[in-house]
Amino acid sequence: MVDQENIRRIRFRLKVLIALHEERTGESLTYQRLSDGAKISTNTITRMAHNNQKRVDLGVLEKLCNFFNCELSDLMRLEPPAADSPES
Image (cartoon, rainbow, N blue to C red; front, top):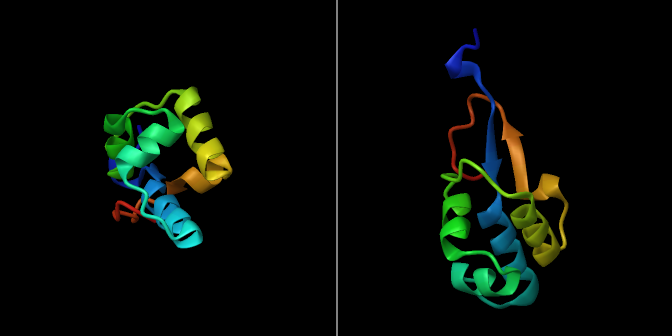
């Protein structure tokens, strides 16, 4: 049996990528603008940004990686059990 307190969790880094995009372009990137640009629902983006998304379609991951021109490992990380912060 797996000790639930020692399970590593996947954390999305969407807020980090948004901040980097804003820094690089000098433009604000709201969830709505990201939704329009990546063709993903704002609800999905919001849940991912707050690490409340339980399941993700591969197409969504592809769209985000293409939008941010990043690798999958830039979009999400498998965090150690002690990482309780929503964004790492």
